Image (cartoon, rainbow, N blue to C red; front, top):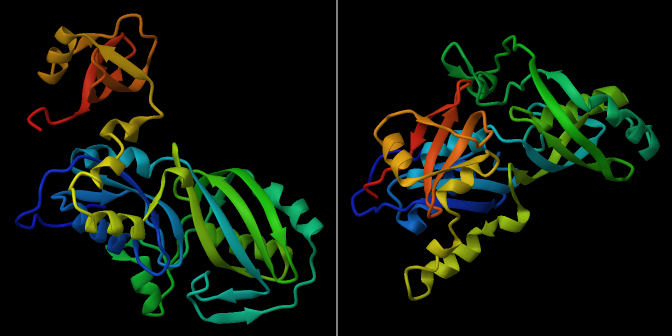
Length: 308
């Protein structure tokens, strides 16, 4: 998602900030605050978090927005607190309670159940989501009291572990593919336990190669902004190429680098890479995203703006 408009006085800033999104603000509100702090002309976040949620929110500035889709599609990890015995209108703590039930399960039963959700599973997206139906967001229809049929979506849970359990609450650690709704997972676990559940709290701990250790708080950003010297904030930015950290690297010589920038195809040589790859110069400068075809020819997919 990109911030709209190009306000006067904003400047070109390129890089990736890993924000520890605070509770109580939307991802777009967090994005706008960061954009203002950096005075950046162009910005976008990679993967929305609900206001209830906290944690890792990559924010791409400037040229990094060209590669934000590859972070949007990255695998993610979460720590989620589930409240057992209550189902809500939204599947999380922001909704009203619609049903209560006695909780007659223990930690052993939960641990026995969780492996059933590991692997590829079909998940029905919640009504309170940003998906569209006939041009309208599902959450808008839900607020109007409408329910529509939603097709199940194939997702994958790589890891699902119980961290702690008490009489009515439990915390789970989840690693999953893109498109996974953790509140739906909480609801589905509650159904299988026979008592119902909703998502009480959520923290995203990882997006692709970035985790909590990389994240900075909004308070820290604001404190640096108030200090003299304009480069302190920019020192927190990761290079644009970090968005493609999971892709294999192809290093181009000067001649091939020029040809790629001119839209030509070049021989990938003996790099033994196929498919998408990260392109760099011999000097270690990130060039962009390329693709090696089956015949060994390399072409550009998305390149940095050399004028910057």
